[in-house]
Image (cartoon, rainbow, N blue to C red):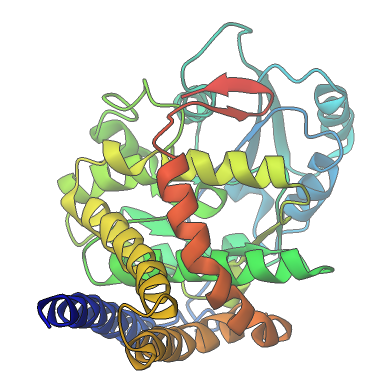
Length: 385
């Protein structure tokens, strides 16, 4: 009888944890709904802010032309933005392609060749070098394999000039999906971006993405750039956001505008996906801010506990009904949160894959939560940590 009571107590304890997870997810749904859009069609919406777009690249010969053409096609005064392509030791034709584009570009396009020497954080080095060369008031970073729409800079300018924030996190999603794994990645990535947007809008910044990040050059210099975290290969986006949030509380925001969406490609191979997620997962232990640490631990424990509850139920240690309630609460809350998020990103074709993603996600979170404890990973053909 004692064993049965203990098993029931354990099952109910896990169920209570999952109820807390569901309430937290419903809170995210409410927060997402409350994030206001910026009206870009007001009479006084003529832009006046100068941007420096920094694009760190390494071996992006296949992608960089498309991005440069997107940037050249911006519906924004050409005198109000410059493009710095930070070439980090590319061994393909990236540099030559950019040089050729410079000869005919209608924009202020520059190629900056970084010194070829070992760096613990090559991307931070590229961005910091670009910031020091920048003439723009605002720094906007994106990646060489990304695509942007024609009103990208205009929407960022309107968001900045309306809010006067020190840092703006922008939406990022994947290019059109062509496979099951593309849809699964789209849903998972949307949940991460939206969760980061919600925590930022509530004043507890946790996540952002360097593929669409804008901040004042003055704010970057004021917090010392990447000093203090420059020994870590990853985190050129989130560590900087946390530093700016500490010095300028309440002066950060999310640009919830479809015109501001940046598109990138989903991973097509398991090794590349594994290395990226391992890189992301390795950051949490280095956060100085308590919010992202607590959030990372809470998400891991909740998903791991759901797997444990399923094993206990399927082996007869706890009633099947407790397991079913756990899955139902988690899935319903995530549906309420993710459906409007996917609609915002224009990813309604991914909605039918939502249930499959939810079935896979607890295994995925548990696996990468453990795999990330090994701090070493490969990125851009380099061994980093």
